Picture 1 (cartoon, one colour):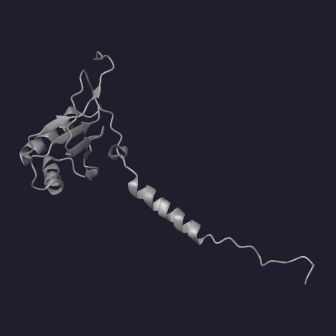
Picture 2 (cartoon, helix red, strand yellow; picture 1 turned 180 degrees about the vertical axis):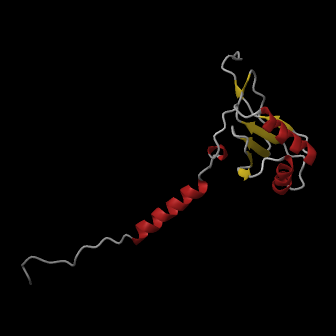
Picture 3 (cartoon, one colour; picture 1 turned 135 degrees about the vertical axis):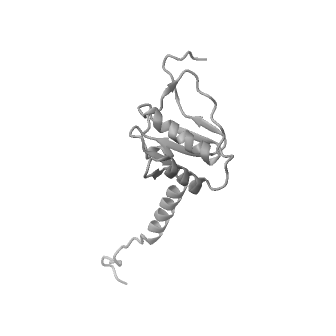
Length: 142
């Protein structure tokens, strides 16, 4: 019988299961995170006295920034001409012309840029069009 101090093997923590759990949690949070579409392009919407109810359907979004550049579903249209805008609309929207289209134009955008987008939409065949606004600060609250 040994009465002296007993020396155990070196204590070791196995971290491989911990790494597996952390990677699984990381993948879960990355895959379930929601991403905001409007975060890419800063658009200051014009104000209106009364806001209409938003349509529940997901439609096509055309954004026009203050410099007159067009973005269709966050894809930039490089040439601001009507023909190029029509080609981009046909390419992105496909054959579905019954989709609602939302124009989100910056408040400082020239009126011609919005009219050009509306003209291209009409020539392609879209009929359900709405323009995004923010509620006015002077608007009466209901």
